[in-house]
Image (cartoon, rainbow, N blue to C red; front, side, top):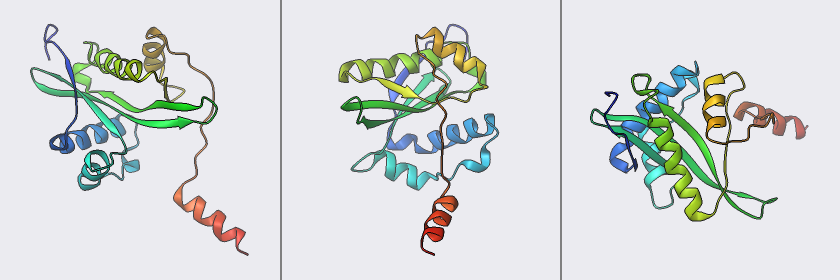
Amino acid sequence: MTANSPVTVREATIEDASEILALIKELAAFEDLSNAVAMDEERLREDGFGSAPRFHVLLAEDVEGVVGYLSYMIRYSIWGGGEFINLDDIYVRESARGRGAGLALMRRLAEIAAARKMTVRWELLVDNLPARKFYTMLGATISEKLIARWSVETVQALVRDGQD
């Protein structure tokens, strides 16, 4: 990607599945979470591009090809009484950072949200200071809400323990 090469953003298609999976794995490696990726190409194709897609993906491209992605889902807020967009991942390849791909992805997501009159929410790691700076520059409000998760093993143990 040269400094002057334009970045375009498009909706991913089923033909992009292998590229999307490669980007997911790159992001996981960047966050030192490679072992956390359980997704495979077949499931990605089915869950993202089947008859009832469970997520959506935007791809950022330049003259050299795909340089980043953004994944999101439509969720419902019982407090807000309506749907909202949950941004799942945004990732730009290291060689393309600082050249507008992340901004282009976020602007496209904003266009989608504005057209549907939806808010957008997402999570980020507390110590990811570059991301905090980027999102703040885009006008995001960053709260200190903590995220709690149960692993499959924990859920199974809790159910087992409750049956005693």
